[in-house]
Image (tube, helix red, strand yellow):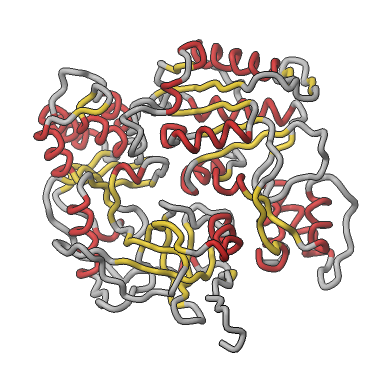
Length: 512
């Protein structure tokens, strides 16, 4: 079968040429596959912007392939070769979910948090990593047979993940990664997807690490809280921003993208937009005019809302219909990481948690109690090594109550909120096959008449919410909840044992 040659649109071709010119100034010639040492001149930042469906991800993927073909090493955050003279590329996203979306498309992306820290490998297993990365001979490892090494090699050839390859050989992360350390040396070239989510501090940190930085972002999304409605790429000089205006279609038109782009019409009212959704639902089953929230979907795909009060009510309704007790979590309940509460003396443990994917906003499924009091077994959605056991502080917010209810808690560790519903702001960077949008909240935003960056707030909210859906959009118009078809399930997530993180409380009393 012959694969058809990729054809760029005019704006994609122009953007590719502009990026290639920036890389040429940085010592990388994509035309001749010629690599030179970094010139050491002024740092370069360029942004590629465009709405959903404009081809940003396709362009990112093709630029990655071109750099890899030119001989640039890919820094994935899980292992790095020790050659100092190599040119490198890191492809980053703000969240686990956004990085996993790229990985599913063959792009070896990792999170920004993960790239800030580098793993420290056990010297014995580092020999396997060096061999897989093409930097050493096939090793002989005590306790590992040739079949295990063959499995590791076969996995790495398809996925380019050292931890994944070692896991395929029968090892766990705790076997071969002994710790994490803060990155001390700057990197080379950085691609950042979903850059509309970056705040000013993250942007400055990235510029310190990457002398050549390329941002990909959607200007129609919501700016981070505290950014006054402005995204970091909107502060760049106009000549440093490349906009993709053409919308690329699949063979059949995508009704979800059609609805998202209809929001650009300044004359469109909320009522007219809802009529468009209802009409689309009659023609295409990828759009659903929902009369209730489908509770079966909420464990893996949270309902998207605008108001916190709505989020809390839906979470408590979800727990009620599943019969969740007041003082415990059910296996399969969804959680959202809300940060890490550890004192400075536990800095290494904080790095362990963040490097394993437990960053603020991470989507997690509760698998059950850990072996120690206050510990939970967790599946981090979208993480490369998803199953861990960690000290947890779980907060269940209640309607009309200021203080959350805490069913159980370690004295320190990762903190979690319930994840059956999330605000649209926090959903940015994530995608799900099916997305439920709670329309009464957006109607409330429309009635308030608020604007953000010159556009009605309800339109920005609707755009972000709609474009989280990969396959199907459910526009929920009534404040009702369905009954569950069965119990919460976790059997599909238990493919591998959880690797423990020893977040034990240390005391100053040696006898304690």
